[in-house]
Image (tube, rainbow, N blue to C red):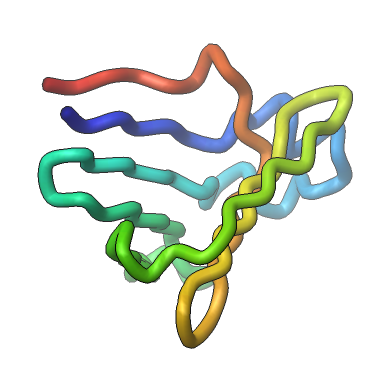
Length: 95
């Protein structure tokens, strides 16, 4: 099963990150492939930066909730990734 979510434009503006409205964070959790992918269009709007982490390398997941939205921080072997300003209504499930 595959779950996808995108940063909420309202949450980005309300939490002081309006510069990221044109290039929000996308997170994809694929339980079949056992990976988490975080994508974000780069600041030049031409390419996409993508980070893929396998479940077996994940050490911790931290969710920092705000009044509007939540930040997700994933610590893995050799580094970490973060995705910002997600809301529950922005998550969609694909089979």
